[in-house]
Length: 72
Image (tube, rainbow, N blue to C red; front, side, top):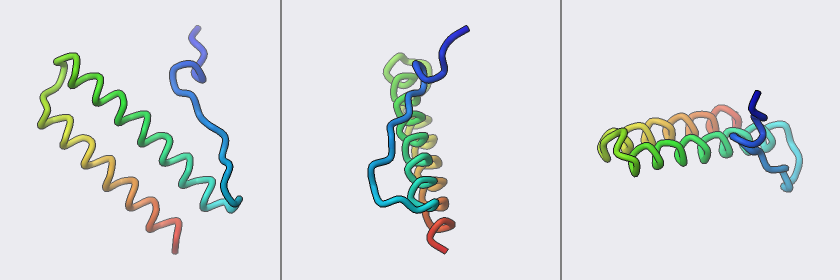
């Protein structure tokens, strides 16, 4: 069985601790990981540049929404 921390490593949070900051940091790390995967798929010819752009734009909207929800 593969170790999930190898495939999807998470960094510690070094900022000012609040539950909102910690959650946004986790969301930001997930965004970064997923963008990396999408870029690799596009580079490998598995998806088109337009599809990669669309997926990343959607992820960006989700990240912005999470930020707005956490700031309320």
